[in-house]
Image 1 (cartoon, helix red, strand yellow):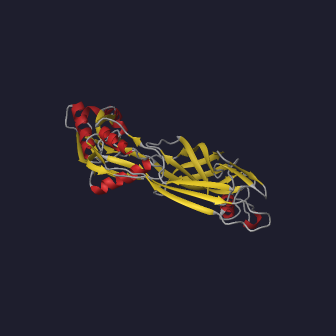
Image 2 (cartoon, rainbow, N blue to C red):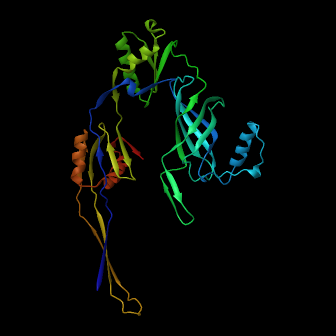
Image 3 (cartoon, helix red, strand yellow):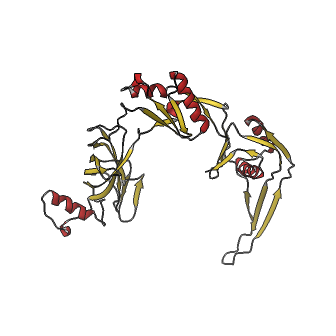
Length: 361
């Protein structure tokens, strides 16, 4: 007799992460705000990659694009005379940095948009890059650096990483600047990374205390506006640098973040729990199969299956806590896994005992 034993356990041992920290902690203003107007801008363009080893596009508008390019070079050809296996149509993207200067070089990201198998060994032809306003701000061109490969024959093919995506290192040359006169600005707007009334108020108070004047005010919880004093006229960069170096108390909300896919639970310091009694049990299903060795050339005999369901007896456990340590101590008494903890936290929130926001990813 051959015995097969299959055991399915409902509970899963996953990850439980708890964040410890002080009720309030200090950070540099530079790490929690950004300056209004100092931002990157997306650029995009359509181009051609040539010099491929037979891995180019077989269909699409690549032939038409190639013919149009040659016509602009005073070369007349027909679409029927062209082959595109060594050419691929691509989309070129890059991020225009803040305060771009003409002649500055940045990287270009190149992605195949047709049925090209690989961009390995290709060269990007001159491609104008436009902004959301339709104007050309940069031009891209150069040899591609591809981090993947694709090889094979008619029977099989091996692909490593993404051979249809590449980078042209410093292949973008900025041709137009974006006008933003920071040096002569009368005020500077600091945009909060996370909107919060308390943190915005703290930033305002720290700046006013440091400069000894009411220079800053907060029109809303997402921003703080700072007037530039007369001694910093024309030296706004120095003024912003001095502000960014200041430390400010950051207020943390009472929040629990749950990732149900991985079973990760992150509990913030300000989470509190009203007195409550919890009972949570584990369920185990055990399946046993028995089968006999069949006689040669005979029908397979019917096997036997035994299914056993068992449940642990658990009693009510009182859990409460005004601090993170007390909550952890109480939940640890239950001896539950992170997966069970997620269900318990959701139930506590519905019962009104959990004083925190639940954010499920």
